[in-house]
Image 1 (tube, rainbow, N blue to C red):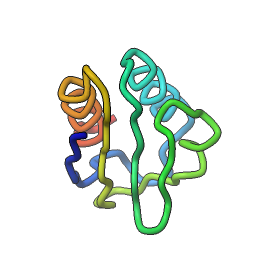
Image 2: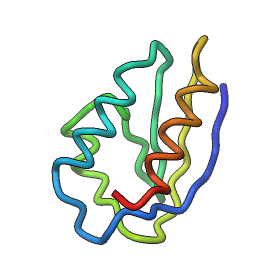
Image 3: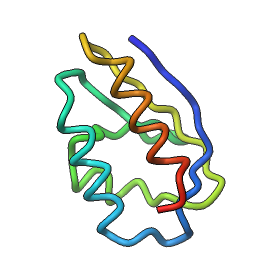
Image 4: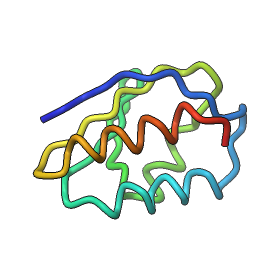
Length: 85
């Protein structure tokens, strides 16, 4: 299992499209992938769960992946969250 905490660089009130892209990225991996913020732990492959996350600029999110491609999953999702979407 790998995890990395990042600060979100997406703009406040992120629209549905960047969240949908994030779910698509996560779905490419076999690993189980979760995003954790405060008391929420959300399956990154669930569009409904991800919509409930409510990303905001500067929010700290921990990306957790467990599986054979966990390193690549954590890297790509972390990079996506920290790029201006």
